[in-house]
Length: 259
Image (cartoon, rainbow, N blue to C red; front, side):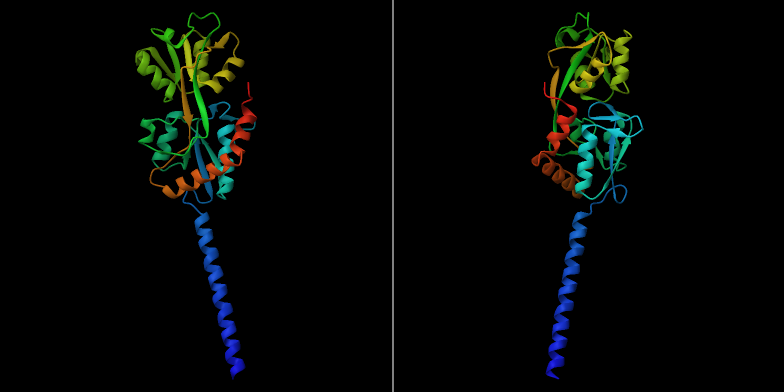
């Protein structure tokens, strides 16, 4: 009888440990799961006309600094990255409305955007640069006064130029490439856009140059829905780890060579 009692006690203890282990495992799985727009996926809203941060590939895919950082974040969260290409003006609103999980499109952190989304830690620095024709009389930012300026709609470049030189002097375009073509065609006198895309556009369009003087400097970060704090903490935590272990720097250096 005593043997039977001991056996029963041993079995009860074993069962208790098994249940405790299962419950613990279940908690860990729950902690590793965050609420996203589509279960098992991390949807990234972007405008894939912003090299080298996001751009399309010949086979219809996406590549660039933001895309690779987003892929690394998704991997850490056990999610599949889905890149959703759209007009730049829709990137933040799509996250704000809950249609997308995060906005990553070379997004500059500013007070106006902070009203609509929560920004993660900064992961890159941006510089607003000025593209002009090689024979242009524009030599410095102040020379833009009274000139026609081309900018991508909704960008900080557009906001800065509208504030400094008046909206009537700024033409907005759906993407940077279209703004640059307007410059080539003589429809505008200059284009103000982020420095790295600017370099790519100058490289692929003869007769254009970048001014040496920067128009403005800014920080890039990821925008997330204000109501999904769990996802914000998960994405920002993953980004911190990727910055600390050098992954972010390696991705940036892959696309932007030190000068």
